[in-house]
Amino acid sequence: MATKKGIVKKTPVKDFANIRKTGIQAINLREDDELIEVKLTDDQAEILMVTMLGQCIRFKETDVRPTGRSAMGVIGMSLMDEDEVVGVQVSTQGDTMLIVSENGMGKRTDIDEYTVQHRGGKGIKTANITDKNGNLAGIVTVSGDEDIMVITDTGVIIRTAVANISQTGRVTQGVKVMRLDDTARIVTFALVEPEEID
Image (cartoon, rainbow, N blue to C red; front, side):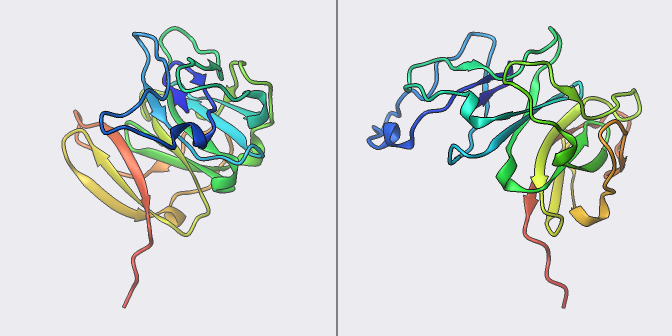
């Protein structure tokens, strides 16, 4: 599990075997924090966390010891005061990281460009944040043969092939994924199976 304030937590799946109708507590959160991602892992993977201001950290999952359901977790990434985590991925999900910004820019970067560090650091730059591209909206690891659906806060959605988004280095802005109205911002995106062409 990962939160927007950079906390990570690992709990055995067996701890969730008997869930009541009203649910059970999975993590203890601070008042100003919220859960943003949950991933099923095998204790062999590496974790990638990316913030809205363009920082990324990659650390071994074994750096996080398993804890019970009521625990709060440990610091996965140290953040600047105004920053927050927008996406967490597991290295086994794909070999390329797709990053999309609020202003519709996107790029793919090989995850090997992110060296493995110890948990709790500030990470390294993964995108050049400017007024043109805006803060990062999210990340996802991809293999390159998927489609991506991008949604704005004004309710507009597009679908495009991930292969249409250029693969570039870490410290770049990327290319235009979606043209937006002046007031619109990308809020989320998701991978889908590619469309079959007749």
